[in-house]
Amino acid sequence: MRNLQKYKILVIVMLLLCGIGCISDEANRCYLNEKLPPKQVSEVQILYEAPQRPYTVIADFQASNGFLFAVSPKHMQKRAAEVGADAVIVVPVGGYYSRDEVWAGKDRHSNSYSRLIGTAIKYKTE
Image 1 (cartoon, rainbow, N blue to C red):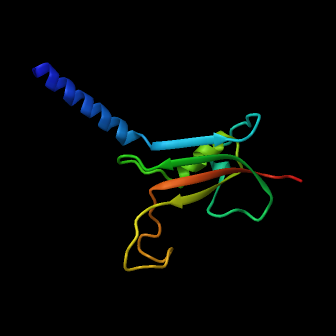
Image 2 (cartoon, rainbow, N blue to C red; image 1 turned 180 degrees about the horizontal axis):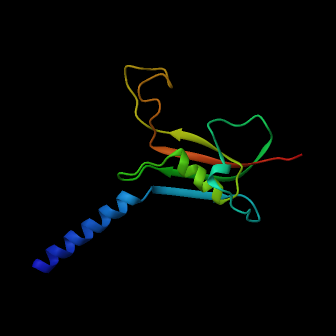
Image 3 (spheres, helix red, strand yellow; image 1 turned 90 degrees about the vertical axis):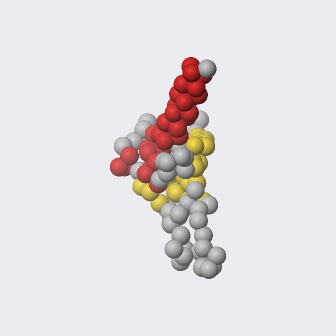
């Protein structure tokens, strides 16, 4: 009986440790037929809207916040660097809101989100 209790506690601790270090619900999709060489993270721009110059979408990433770990635009930048992107367009989805403040982007929770979508792009060189 004592061993069973110890086993249950060990399983709970292991699940909590995974939750602390993991991003939950992450999905990635690459659209190129051939793999591009990775880039340094510092070489990849983080954008919050589509750029004016021509580009090609090479991958999409989605991630939601995990238990005690929040996904960030930097995480999307890292994922984009791994696939050789020039930039990543980051779109926050979900988040908190205030019932008293109706204008999106002007309320106290406008920078909160529960999920990020990142679109990795490669600039066209025509």
